[in-house]
Length: 537
Image 1 (cartoon, rainbow, N blue to C red):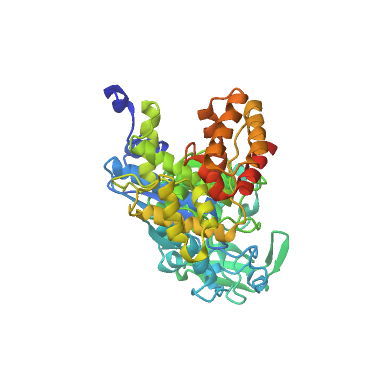
Image 2: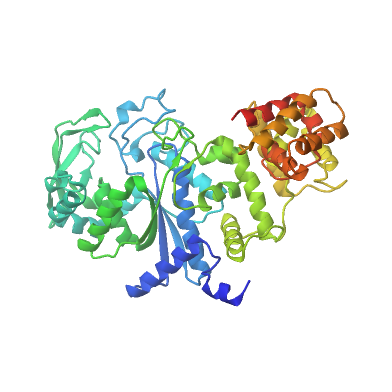
């Protein structure tokens, strides 16, 4: 790489390095202390965390890592909103009696699985578990503890004292007039225990008391009745919480947050909080980066309440933490449609990324540097010293599926040796052992290993048609190799290009073992069905 390219490239050449540099430059312009630069991610506790929930943490963590790489001390804050109220019973828990807890803080609802101290603690622990498995380091804050310990107390006082100004900001930004009439604060009703049914209408700054009435609230089309109680509460007790339209600003100032990524679905709340932070709390809000949502294959937003939850735990059942981080880090902007069927593709893509890192594949200088940087971030900046053994995921899944149940490992090893992935008596590396485990889980849970979608030209389609016709009458691996070669040649294709097409369809990789023995091992019928689906698309 030329000296000029190196001098103009920030860090490892990724978006995260550029964002970290922007954060540093902005903080210096604001003349703020840069001895510790905190990034933040929000941690929901009202339902099952989905893939998008993890994206918040992964992206902010990457910026923290980039800041450290630039020589700055940085820390990722994982702020769990376990003070939030339950608005809807999540899909998957409809058989549990949670309806009666609608409107209650999730930290006060019993855990339906009976393994944590509360419903909120159970749900938040799932995302923390995923962070731990991905090797992400963070400092955890529970909103319930934060309010009880008074960490936001000064901010709450300032916000409630300036409630009219906040009401006007909300009205200006989104046209909502609610907070011109009530305070941006929910007290927990001391009589019925509900959170969202209360309306705070006055704050006494001398006594720190909020005066409220429990009047009820409609949440997602369902009316939660208030008990009618009219009371007061001391904000120092922590028996209440700020609304979303002011709480972000409070915790930014209290925890001194300098960067936070956010999804486009809360863009209005972030914009409102930015103004409140500047105009009410006199704290310049953190640098932001807006990202878009993951969608399911039907184009719907993946949601913990909509019944299409794709959790990090599901991914980690069939794929490595590094492949999951690659999903999050490879691109920051733009929506993406994902499903479980994409996991093998990302496992194979991570192998290709590793090949770039260890100089087995190269692109132009700038792209090669960026890809090597993404690889480092997928390993949380602790990449291995040598490449692992790469075996296409689909191949492993087929092998596991065909293996006798009593000797799966030995069968797979023998086949990998026959195909040239392993030398005789070669020891399996740790990553390959784990990958066999992922493939076993896949084979256990799915009837079919989905082939990779490939854009096929008319020549390639006809070559596959010819191959399928001739495949049925041969049972010799060398003859199968010959009919593949002839199918390509007869349709004006380079045999090497046609082999690459077949490898991509069947294994999700541009190369693999000799196809003749592979087709026989996997079963001609299985391979034929996969190729037929490819040309039918």
